[in-house]
Image 1 (cartoon, rainbow, N blue to C red):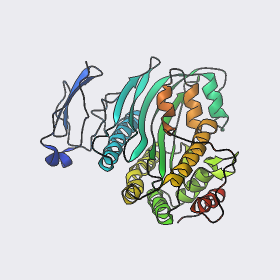
Image 2: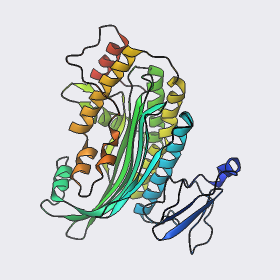
Image 3: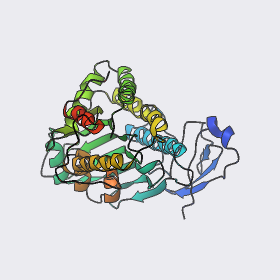
Image 4: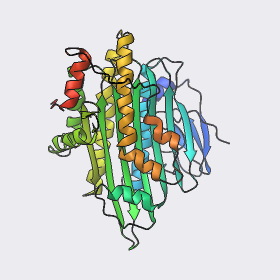
Length: 375
């Protein structure tokens, strides 16, 4: 039997939460007991006070993870912590009666995930924050998908693989608040020769419905700062990659105002992980300020209709071009509800719609046709 609400925050925040109900959870053969942010796993000593925050019991035992642990464990600990930090931050902006639904799921082939969804809320029409930690045999069809983008893996054979990542899409209700997407992932595959190949990938991008140049500049400035900590060339390189990747080719427009995107980082595992961690930790400060700034702005019928049309464009990209969606759908035992959580709750396709010249909608469309340098 599983009893859990949420494994909550660290001792640093415990003083503010002393009166909260203690939570217990049974998973993966162990009992986790929460008391003011300290977790007591069975048969182990008290964990050191850390920034530990989980929406549900992790898929693996990551209680003793250190800097010397395997990259699989370190990445899993990072993503489940980030997931809960973001969910907590989003709930702070939402009406208290709307909370994340938490689904912890497993797959027969190996591994599972934690999917968190707010749907039809006051501030967030649909917000999903999902973590997956999966392993098994990668089928030839999925290998072909990766090789189509230049991976050069042996084709025609199943290979053992491990993948973990965090993915989120946040569709706010107010058209003045942009949609946010981010994904950070780690992948391993073992070839028949016994060689293990690994790489990191990810990115973060913004899709506004009405252009607020100050918000766009602040978003890009935050991402650039995260990149510059590791390499001053990263931001310009990965910003250009993002502009190219999130292009809705059949409409000849970008999905939004961009951000960063990268894949196949495999030069130095520790440096790659630290870079991914910096990018992940930049999500909340890059996005939450614009939620607070715009969530209560007034809007009318016309703004809502434009938002729905733009969400239709968003859905087109995800279903036609997105690599992650394609790979997920080709993976045996895939949880389709989690893969497709990125789709908006509502969208609209209006025949031959074209924004009026000079309108705010037209101004945004012109930016989407010609990606801009924001910083």
